[in-house]
Each structure stands twice: as C-alpha cells, then as structure tokens.
Length: 237
Length: 234
Ligand SMILES: Nc1ncnc2c1ncn2[C@@H]1O[C@H](COP(=O)(O)OP(=O)(O)OP(=O)(O)O)[C@@H](O)[C@H]1O
Ligand SMILES: [Mg+2]
Image (cartoon, rainbow over all chains, first blue to last red; front, side, top):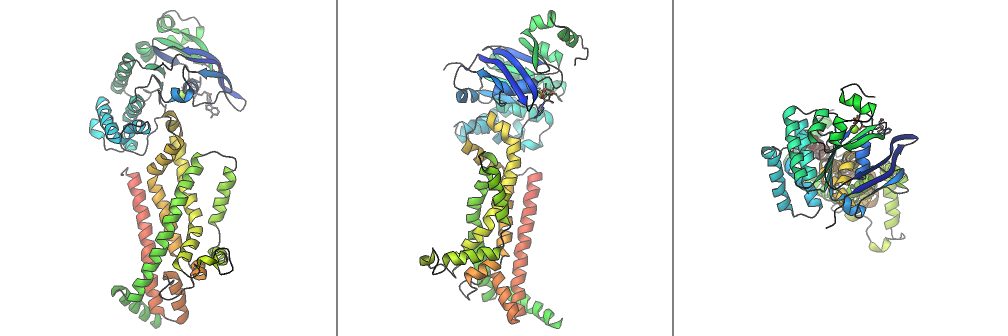
C-alpha cells in the first residue's frame, strides 16, 4: 500500500469573509517525525491543522496527498481542541470508527476494550463518555483517533487543562504511536512539551509561518526575533 | 352540579369494570393512533435527520414548508382527505371513506410534519456537535444519518410521543373522514363529542378519563426519557 505521505500544502489560504485566518502557507509533511506547531492564541494553529486534515475549505492553494483524497482521509486521525464526545459509553465510542470502517461489531468491541485498558479507562467501559472528566475525555478522544492505526495523527492542544500525570500518559501514548510509524502533528502552548516531543517545529503568527525547521535548530539557534522571544518566555503577540 | 357528580361516579364505574363499549372505543383509538404515529415516524424521523445533514438548494424552503404544514388546521386536512377518498374523488375506487384506514391517513398527514420538525431540530443540534468528528472519521452519508438517529434516539422517541399526544386528542379530521360510526370508526374523541351532545355524561366522562390518563402517560414517559438523557443512561 502506498503511503499517503508526504502531504504538500502550497499557497494555502483560509478566509472567513474578508478576513484571512491562514496563509498563504507552504509546507511539506514528510512521512516521518513529530511536528510541533507553536504560536500565540489566534495564530492559526487550529486552522492550519484543520486545513491539513481537510476540514477547512481552502480559498486558494492546494493540499496534496499521495493518494486520492477519500483514501487519504480514512487513514488519518484528528484530536480536536475541545474533545467531541458521542452520546455513547466508552466502549462504543472507541468501537465506533472501527465499525464505520467495516470491522465486525464483536471484534470492534474487543479492540475497544484493549484500548480502554491502554488509556486507563478499562474499568469505565460502560460509563457514558459525556460523564468522563476532562482528562479522561482527552484520552478517549486520543484512543478513538488512534484505534485504526492512522498513518498521520493531528492533535490540537491535547494536553491543555491536563495535569502533569495525564500529560505524561498522553505523551507516552504518542511516543509509542510514533515508534509504530504514525506521523504526528500537534499544536501546543507548552514549550517544555515541545522540547520533549518535537522532531521539527512550525512557528505560526498571524496565520503565517514565521519560522520552521528541525527542533534542535529551532530551540538552539532560532533565527527570528519572535522565536527568540518565545523561547525566552517573553510574551509574544 | 349534582349531575356532574353523578356522571363522575358512573364514569369511574365504567372504567373500573372495563365497560365493553369503553374498552372497544379505547382500543380502536389506540389502534388508529399508534398505526398513524408509527407510519408518520417512519417518514418523519429520517426526514428530519436527512434535512439536518443534507445541503441542497431548496433546503430552507423545505424546512419552512414543514413548519407551515405543522400548523395545518386538522379540520381542513380532514376535508381534503375526505374529498380525495370520496366516491367522486381520485381514490374513490379504494372505498376507504368512513374506515379506520381513512382516519389513519388523515392522522398521518397531521402528525408527520410535527414529528419531522421536532426530529429536524434535535438532529440539527446533534449534527452541529458531531459534524467535525464524523467527517474526520470519514463516515459515509448514510452512516452519518444512522449515527444521528441512533445517538439521538431519546429525542426521536420524544418526537414520536409528541405526535401520539397530538393524534390521540384530535377530533376534527377523524370525525369527517371516519364518520364516528358505532362499532366501526368511533374513537375516544369522537365518542366524547357525540355522548356529550346526547347528554350521556357518564360515558363521555369515562372516555375523558381514559384520554387524560393517556396524555399523562405520554408526558411522564417524555419526562423520564429526558432524565435518562441527563443521567447518561442508555
Ligand atoms: N469562524 C470564524 N470566523 C471568524 N474568525 C475566525 C473563525 N474561526 C477562527 N477565527 C479567527 O481565526 C484566527 C485563527 O484562529 P485559530 O483557532 O486557528 O487560532 P489558534 O492558533 O488555534 O488559537 P488558540 O491558541 O487560541 O487555540 C483567530 O484570530 C480567530 O479569531
Ligand atoms: Mg486553537
């Protein structure tokens, strides 16, 4: 099976009316790595991730996968900034993407059980997803996005509002997924987390990419004053 | 005043002894209404979900039309169905006028827009919260509708119950197309109208009790479904 990656975004812009939320942006997502997207509130991180995933209509430019779009979509996962909980219990929430894609109900529920164990929700299988705590919801959304072994996973600030322990758990799951070959793109406000996870960095401001490159370069020899300010812990706006 | 008290006493007696007329009329009411609501639900519930998910050119107009149909005066619906089914009408050969089937048809026309409209509102809200997720999981259109119907099932049952509440208490249309014929098309509401006119208050009140009990049952059930929702059960 040919890989869906690399993904090439060229001259992509997203507008709402006259306002440009993103772009023009050029970027290539290579088949391997862990990209961290940094930038202040309103920089366009969410918009960029959604555009890459095909949830935003591009007003100009293009996003090109190596396979037809319909194919590419079903081999991606997305964890939203505010996790979307279905009106189902934990087990059925996890089984849902599998069932949609033709896995038999019994097997789907079995695999859902295994994933629930992995994320520490093994004894909450019958609990309504909407009643989980914030951190549990994030973990559920993550497992739901990973359960079909996507080739690429997008995460929009998955650890905002989580405590240290939950953050560590999520980071561990992500690192395992990456080791198993899943390409990861994730936005965060947490510079420490970026340092721990990133293989490369995209730094956004005002809907444009200000600086991008390998994580080591970005963190040790940033080339723009905005990046220097960000890494110094100054307020960037 | 005395007459009413006497009536109440006699009515209670009829209910408690399962008076055969009362039972027959009640069962016919249930049969007509349940059949009509079942068919109206089969049409209205998926229609509401489809309208919530599907974008097409005259969508707004369709929804406006649906809401307008909800306000149709039942008597006029009865008149139109009567004309369609009457000997001279286009469906006269079917010989359906003054049968329970005619009453079911009229009730379907009255109740379907109501059910579809409530379903549409519920499905629209659910779709707003599910939209990104279901697109992201790359569900097909039919799977989306199926998911909305299943996950919104409590709201849909509520919609069907609202339809039942409307249909069981309706009198104008079924009086016209059913004719209120004894042992054939007489139902709770038409019987109450007739018996009241005849001054037969005990039977009228007894039938009224049954009607009120059914209405309360519908409300309590609706309320309980709302509770399981907020408690996250099923
Ligand atoms: N529907 C919309 N209509 C108008 N403007 C919008 C809309 N959605 C987002 N925006 C604007 O687009 C810009 C980028 O938003 P985006 O959500 O991508 O930022 P972000 O980097 O994810 O911010 P945060 O860190 O707060 O999540 C913001 O200025 C936001 O106000
Ligand atoms: Mg955001």
